[in-house]
Length: 110
Length: 121
Image 1 (cartoon, each protein chain N blue to C red):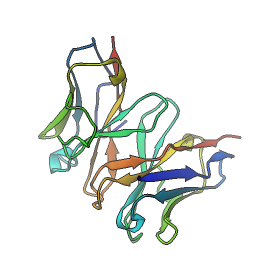
Image 2: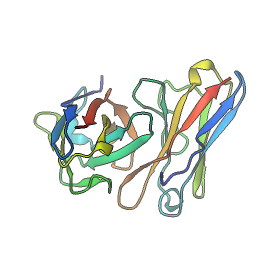
Image 3: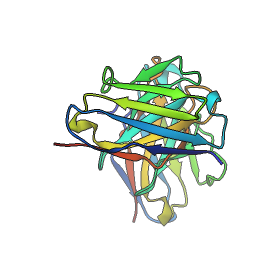
Image 4: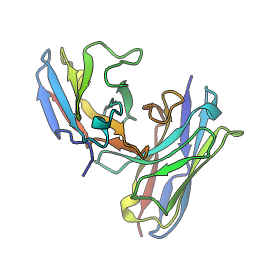
């Protein structure tokens, strides 16, 4: 059971918008630690998608956005494309500098 | 180009030991903290261990504390994970990952392709 809670799966049709939530607690996200998001396509290593709550690394399309509020965070993907089908993970830290991952959300593009 | 390449995986019996290595290139290794993250077959990501840039500070997940030991050799641009008393539940793909910047709370910005560890009799 992950400390950060994500929905196991979400789905959407091409062109639609989907969101993925990440719920933590006052010990991690709510304590002010940043939330980061990763995308993992089948058979590949995770790729950093969003860092420090809402920042996109170079090369990540602006169809991906994220936000953080209180003890939760969310990732939004607009204009869904077939290539977006992947697993998505949120990540934060706690005061012990433990790295915390969400359980992951499988995105299916219908 | 930043690269991290894991090696040392394989099949080991329960109770056995294995040492993973991660060779880093394309950046000043001694300036960055590093992580080991694992992924069991069909499961999600699980953080295993972190080590500070100097090697002075090490952090472990509760699931491996007392059994695994992380270290680094900045002169050799290498990260290591010594795994002892291995259990079936340690079976996973083990990733070496570099923090995005020099702080230990920054995300894992660069990942290797992973090395498979299988614990089975």
